[in-house]
Length: 164
Image (tube, rainbow, N blue to C red; front, side, top):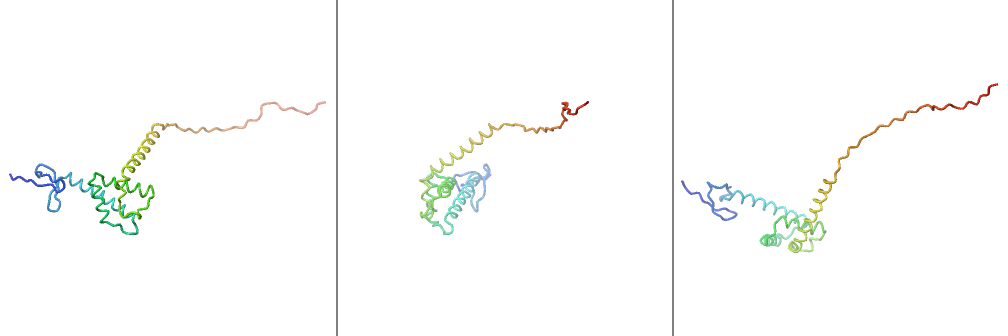
């Protein structure tokens, strides 16, 4: 039997196509997990670039600068979704103006603040949900129908007639 070893396009490791799950990417091969991870990262990058484009609207951002910044931040260990949430926090939640900057250089400075903000917001929502769940009391509301019946008075009335 021929040995069918190939090199993964994404991770660079050699693997046997007969023993591992793989996907053909154009003329090359990749581990199925590496391919799915790459597709997920591409979708996250697309989400970040769409946000940047919407922040700069109606003008067009300088994609040369922004592309190199995003690549550098990714190499430094930041995730694309982390960058997305940082930009959302800094420009949408805090309402800062993006037109004052040439790119997205604020990301390394606001990354940890945004992370703490979202962690705090998440904890707030989680705690509120737990409290609401714990304090929810099931009380059945009943409706009592009260009818009032008018009775004639039972007392004898005074009689003012004179008898002779």
